Image (cartoon, rainbow, N blue to C red; front, side, top):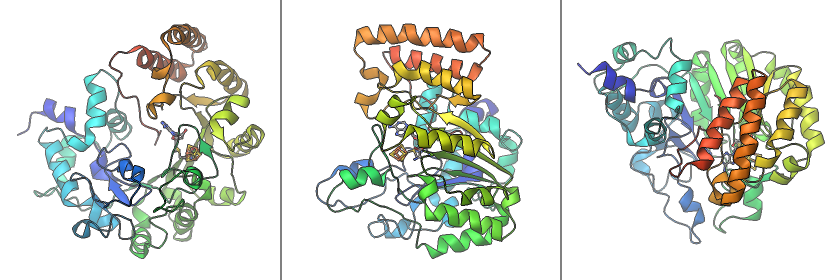
Amino acid sequence: MTDPEARSRTMCVLPWIHLCASIDGVYGRCCVDDSMYHNKLYEQEEEPEFLLNDDAVGCSPRSRYAADNPGRVMGLADAFNSPNMRRTRLAMLAGERVDACSYCYHREDHGALSYRQEINQRFRDIADPDRLAARTAPDGTVEDFPFFLDIRFGNTCNLRCVMCAYPVSSGWGAKKRPAWSSAVIDAYRDDDELWQTLRENAHLIRRLYFAGGEPFMQPGHFALLDLLVETGNAGNVDVVYNSNLTVLPESVFDRFRHFKSIGIGASCDGYGEVFERIRQGAKWETFIANVRRARSEVNLWLQVAPQRDNVWGLRDLLEFARAEGLDVDLANVVQWPAEMSVLSLPEEDKVRATGELTSLIDWCAGLGWEKPAADLRALRTFMNSADPVDLPPEIAA
Ligand SMILES: C[S@@+](CC[C@H](N)C(=O)[O-])C[C@H]1O[C@@H](n2cnc3c(N)ncnc32)[C@H](O)[C@@H]1O
Ligand code: SF4
């Protein structure tokens, strides 16, 4: 019998309920699964072999990894019970740490809250280790379909935000990419097996997270919403987005009305001119008009990525949000590229920024605005730490 204490330090409910499918067709345990990202390959001048990390869950049939990893090509349902997913569950149940989950364990070791802890809390009704163990076969298999999906339907994007890059954004790809690769990547568009699996299991889906690329430019994202509406299952599903909200087809609202809930984290890294400087290609007026339109129908908050170039603009942004009655999430602190991070500020600027953040924290706390106050405290600690702790992942999924 595994020590429950040890198990509570390693268990995460996600491998029992969730699958992430990345832009370039690699499956992950979640969006911060260390084994899923192979970004170094996109820095090679000559086309490299697209070999998967040993720990990666697997890859989809239409992904660029498929040819170089024939034994590890699989559909979504098989990926959920792939050898590495089964090993992950058994290790967690035995109270062992899983290498692919080091992002979360690293944060916890430094006293910070991890995505694992957040998500276990969010799904506390089902995250009980004994109940999960009872659903797990001796070889680690779980019979259910993952009810919470994060499928990145390609990298199509109209912007080139200064802290983003190829392959995440086709906008960046159009400007800067290796000659052997195309600007637009969409690993799931012609993946018939994926679409059949989604159709067969539509009644089991309960939660979707969309990012990208820009979700409101992704045909695959619209196709999945339509599939859920057509099959009569949309009413079961909570949908969460990160979107640049510079593109918002009116037709989304007809679809949204069928769903159980819609939440949009509208990415906004500054007010006015700061916004346009960071979110290259975006217009503040368009963004604000879309924010106002969308919030009249769905739950919407501003999703800020604190970084070197907006630390002085956070006050204007927070005052604007307050005046508009919008919530703000500042937890997704930029760590890479390193020169975009607040860590790259000269020492004298860090001292000044510490004063500014302290004043903002006091202002937020005085208003009882606890989430921004807590995020800003974490940012201040991160900026001044000699051994910075990774800060929370990109999503509020
Ligand atoms: C990659 S974007 C995709 C969705 C959509 N295009 C958007 O901008 O919201 C998802 C989130 O990641 C953030 N992001 C982009 N580059 C980042 C970086 N280098 N570090 C941390 N977050 C970043 C964006 O600001 C956005 O909130
Ligand atoms: S809008 Fe999103 S995906 Fe596009 S460049 Fe900006 S952060 Fe990247």
